[in-house]
Amino acid sequence: NAGVTQTPKFRVLKTGQSMTLLCAQDMNHEYMYWYRQDPGMGLRLIHYSVGEGTTAKGEVPDGYNVSRLKKQNFLLGLESAAPSQTSVYFCASSTPVTGGYYGYTFGSGTRLTVV
Amino acid sequence: AQKVTQAQTEISVVEKEDVTLDCVYETRDTTYYLFWYKQPPSGELVFLIRRNSFDEQNEISGRYSWNFQKSTSSFNFTITASQVVDSAVYFCALIPDVPYRGSTLGRLYFGRGTQLTVWP
Image (cartoon, rainbow over all chains, first blue to last red; front, side, top):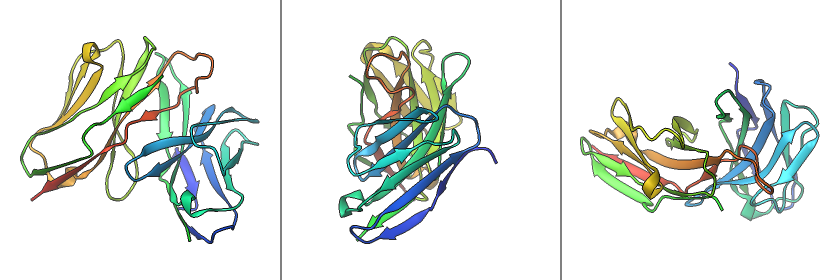
């Protein structure tokens, strides 16, 4: 089925370890985003990309890096995980469509625990 | 600045009661989109509705209805005859449509969510 796929779905890390979260979309969307969700905080934007090879910081970028080497993939990296990065991570993609609406699709989320 | 406020952190109702979830938004843009998402205990985000700023018609879909009022910058969501399966976190969100310097194309600005619990 077309959509946004996140890998992995669950992960436990030790403080200081590194990991990469993968987001893949097959809808040819230009824009991709990484959000994190924390209790009582809603979803907050970490980084985003408006096209292949371009990335930019969102609202809470510290401690994360991203890359978009291919249009369909958007990687989120944690170089040295900290307990404060325990969260649920959502990837999303979008594109402007006729009428001005941004067609928007979310992945199913990655639950990350840093101990 | 873009901002979405959901003042109700938690709401508890008994099954079959009606419940309204409040959403107030702030934006400088004249064109924008408003959304409601549901997040059940399983964790995924379920899209419920999208409304653009030029369409102030209220909408009803089964037990769900939405009241969009630009005059008060509100986009409230009502569940009629609530059911246990409606228990979830509900998010209101905003996309400003007009790109301007410093904006993020297509970024969703989320409220903090309202936890709705429906008791049998």
